[in-house]
Image 1 (tube, rainbow, N blue to C red):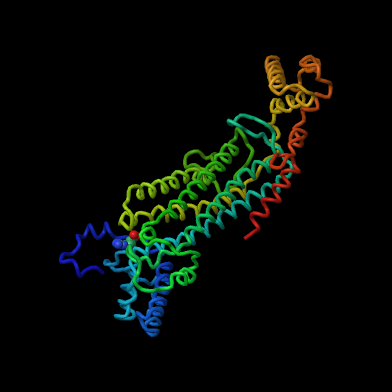
Image 2 (cartoon, protein in one colour):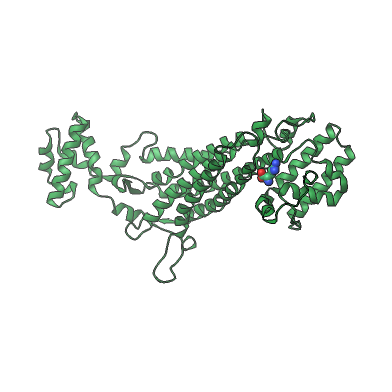
Length: 455
Ligand code: ARG
């Protein structure tokens, strides 16, 4: 490929070190698509004849078929996907293959391939996110008005609708989808035509090239274009945050499925047993989902670290961008459907959740009762706190304190104060958009439905 300038063979270990075919071969579709589009431009600007163009395109389609059918035979000298495709094209169509690389460099070629590949990955991950959203939404619809304890600091806080908690895991995924869509906009920029650094001397129509490859803009600067990997860093940030969101969902599911909580039972299909303890049923699906956040974050850090301190334009360091990219995409393409399946098949136990509600979770409602009767919130908070302590000292539930104790707590208290000790009532009072009252959650469900339906 660059043999003309060299008099010595490359060292065997160096060749192995330099080789990227083992991992960049998976960009064969994108590489061949890009080359077909490039061949058309070469004919347009008169570098090759229409006949030569057709020979190249036919040959590239043959190479495509070899990859598609698993027939492509790699040679030791195939340094990367770009050289492998060109080498095979030469074997199939002869010397005209040597014209394909005119006015192009592997620098703009690889940047184009990776962008095309990333756009495909974004589409697949969006599908995976949507499937998980649908599973959460279906469970939320099934949950109806079932209540559960809402936790802050993992301590019982206030009653909420089970559907409300489920949807708390829906919206982060919606933001992930929006972030990926935004990342796709910048990814769909065409570097081809930038050559190695200075731009191609051929008057190719870059806008037409972009359109043919499904991209929306062309890069404005060839030096930037061959080194810009922002889209990979952005994609990996999106992936790392998705991993973080999955880990939070997973953590909730893991603790809620423990015997101590008993709020949910995971399907056998998403659990595994223990080789030693016959009684064990472990939430491995969710534990792995939680664990994958680590490698996704690692992929992001790996690429940011490679990029840091590089001079402008192309450097071989950039070859290190692909494995973390592929790893993150592969990880999510498997993790998201597993998460969707594990959520869809989980059985929630509203009876157990309801049994875990305790009166102290209505202390805020008691304070709200006082506030509604003109007591400043800080004072109401203090009075209620004293009542909670009193109940604790007597070893009874807050609602089981004698009525006189409440009446003595503050002059505004009347016998109807005991009505605050009703979990359904508590939830029903939180009616603003985004709150946990059944009507507000119905509204939220309708909004969520629109998110998974629109395309
Ligand atoms: N395999 C290389 C990569 O992934 C392709 C670009 C090589 N360019 C070069 N000037 N050596 O980055």
